[in-house]
Length: 407
Image (cartoon, rainbow, N blue to C red; front, top):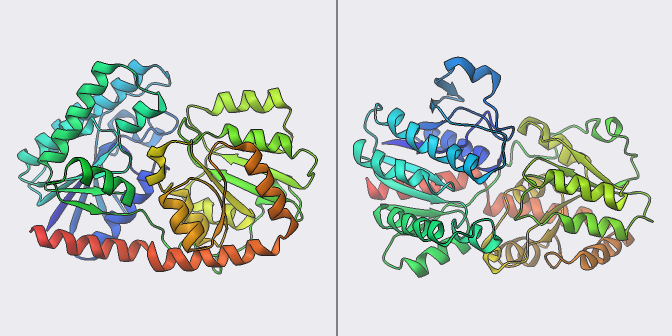
């Protein structure tokens, strides 16, 4: 069997969908599936084509044994809506013209968002005689509408129509969380929907195999400092202001530090807020390669995972949860619903705080600091849970069995 993965985002870019799709591709190929990837020239998050790929270089390459085909994409560092749409639709157009030259596949799995890639996927699946698998990692455009990112009613109407077309034409719809699966199943009751969760490489993120690096020393932290860490996109959905507001309430805790690592559309706003509030206990770091993350997680004490307080996010499980838990780092989880059920109620792997409630966050941190030993047990609970329930090897094997049913 042959599978083509169509995605705008893929390594060497860093990010959640990049890691998730590549890890899945490698494991499916190891199980006997022939896997290829059709993606854009790498540009995220800097929104600039990586130097090694400029001038028409590396339009086809092997990454860990996976054949990767790349097509042109328009990139701009402008934050305007027009620039963003040009970015999305340029790849929709170029991916079709690049993909139509490939051989036939049994399956085409397209990653959404961006939802617009569905235009290319619908046509390529027919051209390549491949069964369409529509993989949903975020309920777009619903999330964009409820976050207030997209307000144009005509645009939203067209986006919802495209979503319905993609779901109705797909041989199989896969959802990253059970919340996504349930939402799609309610709205499209006749369509087959499968839970394809994110997970973690429990061998790569293994605290017993990772040496303690010099992260604290290099960045001026003492061994006695307590480090609360957020790593990921600095976007609208995360509501990261809550961390700065809680930090302002905890300035007197001299050994307490908040680390925010990553990039995204809200970074400048957050940096300005830090300056305005004179927060010496908040530290911003640039994103790093995946290879550096295990040592960084080894050095911190607790992982913070916030999202805005929206019913939509009660079905969300941010990918950063899995790596932190695999490294035996407990969670300070500002996400209600499915994530809370899994990792706080079932796994006992940390503490739940009400989303966007800075006072509750600060109070919870004060309680944690009174008994630091509880961090160790919560961390051990977390690793045990993700090893049992979110091991990437098991996820890929189950999905491979699912694909064989459609052959």
